Amino acid sequence: MTYLMESAQEVHRLQAQASATSYAERLRLTGLRPGDAALDVGCGPGVITSEMLDVVGPHGRVVGIEPQAEHLAAARGLLAGRPNVELRQGALPDTQLPADHFDYVWCQYVFEYLGEPGPALAELVRVVRPGGRVVVADIDGVGLWNWPFPEDLQEASQKLLAALRAARFDLHAGRKLFHLFRKAGLVDVRVHISPFYVAAGAVDARLREDWVIRFRTLRPLAEPFFGGAGPYDAFCERFLALLDDADTLKYAMVLTTEGVKR
Image 1 (cartoon, one colour):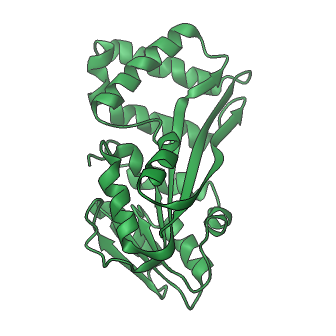
Image 2 (tube, rainbow, N blue to C red):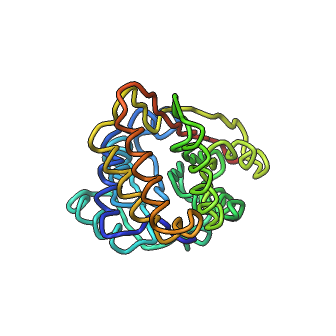
């Protein structure tokens, strides 16, 4: 797995992104309970891991795994002194964790980076106990759902999508999870839809900065698909102007899919 968004600002971006939403309700909705042994796969800087600890309480425990060393260090700093948590460096599809072990497995914004998601899901199923829950949350169409959305800007956006596809990044990973869960043999599969962001009018400073960082980080990948730095800069400026437009709706969705291991 290649993590396309890695940059000097990525830990800060992930912390701000995760802190903009409370996850406790979604965690409980998808089956996380007090006393559970839970796993956070791709835990990043540990913001959601912290909320998982709050939900499982003093009689539960949480293991977080993360491949990026800097992200893991941030998680260790955030969770220092908290009991019943273990953080490990590791990644899908081979977590090096025991089989049939966890009551609840959470994985967010990881499958979008996986060109072959089947082995990763199989690993999540392997480590959860029979009767336990696997929960995967991922995006659908970030940056594509805007209105009005000028036709020439839509066409330019397709160049960025082509660059992402070439790097095996999937902007529509979320919609594909239900089918993957069914094919993996999970039962009681349910899908929950929630906003990744909704901006009726100009976006707030945090979301605008998130896009600025995205465009800066993706520059080496995207420029060849635009024909050079100039056309790419022009696209970024126009897209940011769209985000600033008080008369435009911008939104994106997250699909959270849960299933039970037989």
